[in-house]
Length: 483
Ligand code: CS2
Image 1 (spheres, protein in one colour):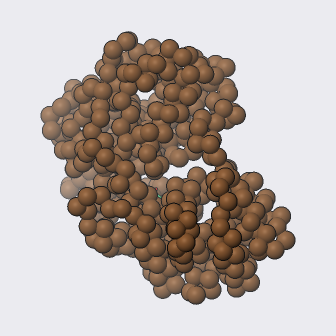
Image 2 (cartoon, rainbow, N blue to C red):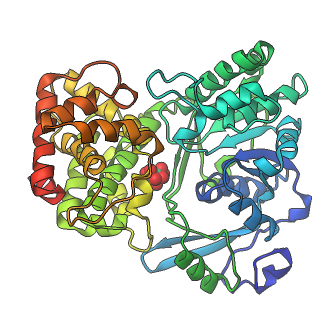
Image 3 (tube, protein in one colour):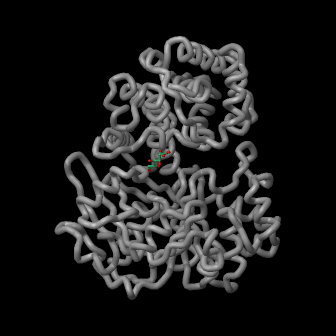
């Protein structure tokens, strides 16, 4: 039997159900990017605010790219389950906060209408790092991006995140307060989104750019929860627990964190009810999380892919990859300014435990995707600061070589071909593969400004990288990691 409002009573004992009248929920939030992460993270903080008695915050979920999730949710009256798994322990709840699910290409008028509705007070976004049409070298709006060009030519039929937001804002009544919270893993996400949105609006309609600057708040935020993409096996497992079929079921860790800059244009949900921290400055939290969690995650992903480990927990259990991941975390930690009063040692210790959670099937291939978007955020600021101060970061430097080797060779140590899911990597891969020595490969890679920036990297660093590439080519990843 499929999960739906009328089948809720069929859920197994112990499954927590929405403890409020869903019929009484008003639409208060539009969320763009209806993937598992939003449904296991921000939606649960909103669910907590609703459970606290504030029925203003029903979520209109919007998918820009994939129809699957909106379709699955519509068939389930927008209900879905979240199971938190830690070792043998698991708790399952059904979430009721989503009240509408729209696939934008098929429901654009409704999406724009929702964004224009003055009853919508908050917009949240999880569209991944590449979903903001940012030019990789300049960090400004990528005006050559096909979707941006399309949207500037057809502003009422937009396809991009920025185009959809702009079309909705343009129709909002003047003075209706709106806050837009970017929840993607980017440093200064609440500075980047307004910059790009305003640059887009300047080209589309300068009056709109003024409104965005004057009327809309875009707070920074740091989001954290490990939420693997669902698989047929995880959906079947959830069905056993639930007693109902849920095509949108999520299995994730129990840890969750959301730190939000307290800068809203109007009312917002009391996300504190779910444990969110509202604070004046989110940037130290962002840097800490992006470097220590996501930075180490990416290392585990590339080392895991090359050494034949499909899941993060399996890679962490390997003595070579696990020790190397800890070494990279130490290197990164030396570059992090902790938020005031924060115990970074405890944070790192907890991260290593979270990565070792074998109850989660978190695939290294999932994290390895879009490296050209992730590496510049997760590793390169720390590396740039360190080499500028003439400090070597032995593990982090080897991690960078490992990623480049992954792109260059396209296969694991045992010769298995690896699928590289990174649309932005084509030019970098071509440079690496065209090089006829390791030194040239290092030069060619570091000279690729969209990823490595325009400023040259010091010669000793280039030499070290070339040395690592040689070990990788001759003896494989496991050999370099064990050095
Ligand atoms: C991961 C993140 O896929 C990835 O790149 O590093 O999704 C990570 O699991 C989350 O940011 C954890 O908060």
